[in-house]
Amino acid sequence: MSLRTSSAALAFAVLAGCGAPSPEPGGVTMECATGGAADLAPVCTVNEVKAMDEDAYLVIWHSDGGFRRVRYLAAEARVEVLDGAEQATEFVPEPDGSLAFAIAGDRYRLPADFVSGRADPQPTPQ
Image (cartoon, rainbow, N blue to C red):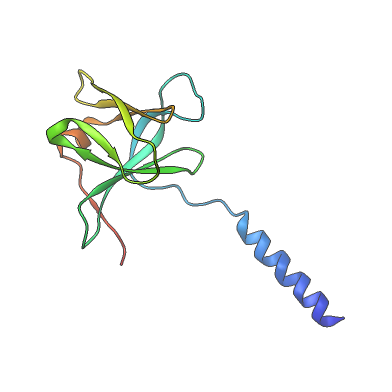
């Protein structure tokens, strides 16, 4: 009986930990419209990641916890999607220096600091 009780208590402890909220991702606030939202709003964040053995890439965090990994290609003024089968489309340079684009129905506006290369990469913990 005590084994059954111990197993049940352990299972509840593990499940309780699963519901804990994740910490907010760091980065710069950016405008996006995800999950069918009609208008762009400053609810996503983006940060540049530089691993020791890789080129720098961007991580765009959605407000629901989802994310996309992309690489900004300055010479072509476009974004390359690094995960999944979807491709970025609809590249529109904005007057403020930002770049608007879409991926699979979600829309984003990459801040000018990332387009111009002025953003500081965040090292990836090893």
